[in-house]
Length: 269
Image (cartoon, rainbow, N blue to C red; front, side):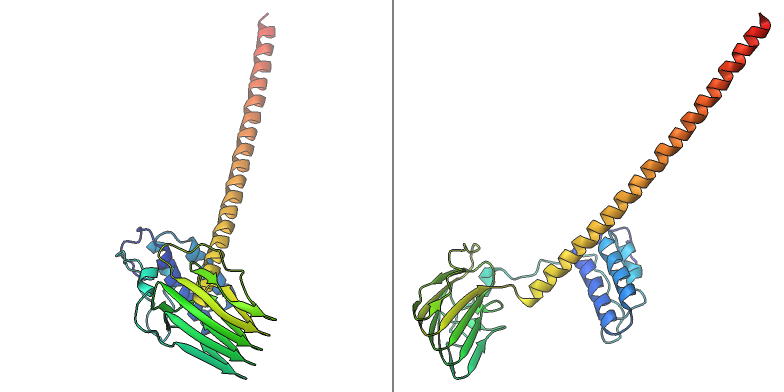
């Protein structure tokens, strides 16, 4: 954490870097839970580099290195647009088979323009949440016979279901949800006999963690705002009480002065 320009405003990314150091310190036993929560709350309430600096000054990062410095240079936004995930090519894998067994296609892989999968007394998982796409439109052709196949897509992707089920079924719950501009289109087709093909839309684990931290930060900010409101209320009450006491004192003093003047006038008469 830099000590230069302590009055400069810190960004959300700066606060997240400090929060990550605190989480590592908690996992390594350098902080107990009470210290961690206290410092994390201070992190999300910090507005400047000068307020962030003391929070990790006595903590190393993983591996024993000194705590990272906060950059004073605005970095470019992280890449991750849909256009960058449509990469062309043939795809990492074009098929999957589960016969009394199972298969998975998940993580960092490239979904081909057409992926064919088959499950017989088994199950398969096709997870596109972190995948790249060989084309703007990809088709997942699913054949499930007394088995199950599941297709997981990230938010923002348009889904079209064209499968046929006989004593089985295709999940249509995610169909009809509009996609983001430039997002790929996923067509789920095929055949299910005494089996099923599920389609679900889920966030990645990293995105869920980010949203959880964001909700936690908002909760801490709300708690801080409530405390500030209570403090302001108490200050207003104290100020009102002070003015009331001063007003009463002035009233009593004026009353005594008026009575004194009346006594003096009577004596003069």
